[in-house]
Image (cartoon, rainbow, N blue to C red; front, top):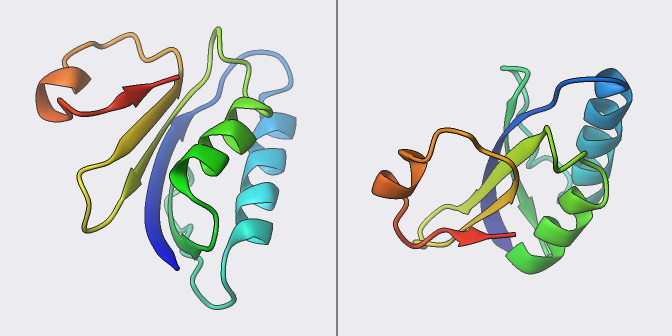
Length: 100
């Protein structure tokens, strides 16, 4: 079981649909009772999926030209960026982030 966090920005046409699909798919991939989503654009959860599978699942939903998601693992220095984060200062603090 892996412990994850994800923050995301979804914008543009059909943003409500993509957000709903993303949260639904992540919740389906989460272990029962491990889901936290109070803030609207940040979730924590546990899943049997590895981070690469979560990255691919997320990339299949987002419009990667205008949306982004940053997926991280608690307890490990492993991150995956999906889409277009325009503020590159992110890479100062997450030097080992994999970019997809």
